[in-house]
Image (cartoon, rainbow, N blue to C red; front, side, top):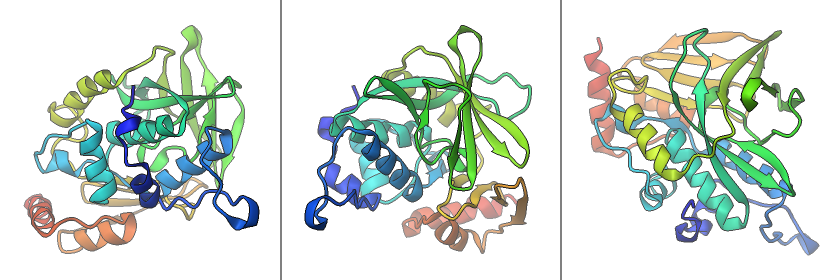
Length: 283
């Protein structure tokens, strides 16, 4: 399903800084398709690989075949958006031996606006229990898997709290607690999605004039220090668990340093120069 047999698993694990858990005499324990491994791989992935759609801004196609994703996110140490991130995670989990299925989700972070299904998420089954895995929702997304078999259960991840509630027709809604308020992030139905479905969603997200990624710089990261970071256009936002949001403006002369410092992104010289030129053209 996810071309896991084609993945250079060692290179992926090195990219996410995988240490694994220690077995006898301090030796790394073999990767197993169990809940401990699922948590560890998911958290390492989200801690390391930034959410970004810079190729869309640069006018380049976003390829979803595994070798292209691996070359970009693993070997070139770039980031990616949901289709790339979760396709890579799915391939790695499949290679380890997990049962992985896709879902299509509807973003709910824009109030009452009804948006199309454009977000890709994963459902991983471990010992008969389904878990939501999502490395591609940017700075507000979960750092670790969320249980789907117990709707309404609050799950603490560091300083952040999530829950999944159920609506009619089996629709599940992922929610994030910000301050004292629960906020919907996205909703998805039980219908399985396949990689070919993500190709169609990717075409819209990367090329349609109404897409939030077309013509706009978007880089985000859930962070490993409790602070969530998002650079959208020229506005850098640092989101805190208590609901506070700090903003600052990022000009073209600061852009590359901010991408490196806040998101761990370093682009080749030619790409960096083009990105700065586009950013400056917005003056």
